[in-house]
Each structure stands twice: as structure tokens, then as C-alpha cells.
Image (cartoon, rainbow, N blue to C red; front, top):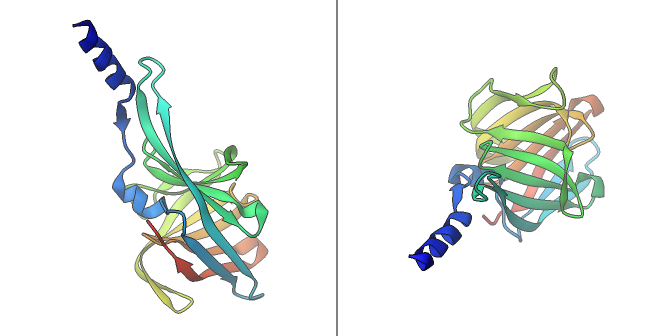
Length: 200
């Protein structure tokens, strides 16, 4: 009986109550070897991003010391250091967020929600303060970006993109691909995905 209790207790401490939804993984989990190259429409400047590492984290229930929910951190690096970020997939919030990070530690005050499940046009999520938010603007079955057709694309307007210097941003994110277009209206920049390799 004593041995049985020990085994059961150990099992309880390792229990994951909520896993990340497989649908969320399709929007934000990319493996090492994945890369994206973007071109700015006017200047023709190029910026490249790549997956540096993937990390699974577990948040514990304070009352029972059980693994309460699972988060996945997909760390993405870029040639421009200030643009390093992580896709953070949360089983608790059922969303994909962008976090700026330093030394692989996300900066909690510099994150922005990319999308929430279930997807719904007009859906809003919190941004940098009570008077600003992110909102799903349009859901495209098919969208052409730089001559490439992408299926299942969600356009989100973030009034205060904390992952990128608080700039208002339109993100276009394709399922199983990632961000395919970024529009920064205040600084008159548009970055399109022109080449990529995806490993999920």
C-alpha cells in the first residue's frame, strides 16, 4: 500500500492537466531548420529569421504541485537583433503570442497576441493598455503575397505591437507557414515573405 501511494503521488506531480491544442501548434510551432526571408516593398531591404530552439514549459498548480498547463516557446532569431522574438503557444489562454526576449528569457512587458482560438472576425484581445487592443480583421481562405498563394490566412490589427517598439501593426499569419506579411502604417513599411522553409 505504501509503495502504491508513492507511485500515485509521483504520477500526480507529473500530470499535465492541459496540453497545447494541436490546432495551435499548426499556427505557432516550428522546428529548428525553419527559416523565413522577408523583403520590404519600397526599399527592397531583406531581413531573415530562423528558429533557434523550441522549449516546452509547464506551469504548476500552487495548491497541488501538479503540472497545470503546457506552454511551448519557439525562439526565432533575426539578422536585426531588436527583432528577436518567440512564438509562445499557451494552452491556458488558447493563443499564440509574440514575445521579445533576451538571452532566451521572454520580456513579459513586451508581448503581443498574434491570434486566439477559435478564430472569429472581429474578435479582440488585450494589447498594451485598456484603450488599445488586437483584433482579427479578416480571415482569408486564400491570399497572394509576393506572387505566392497562402491558404488559411488571418489578418490581425495590433494597435500597440509590444513585440516591435509599440508600433501599430497588421500581421498576416498563414496556418503551417507563420507570418507572411507585416504592415507598419505609421512608419510606412510593408514586409512580405519571399522565401521560406518550414519544418513542423
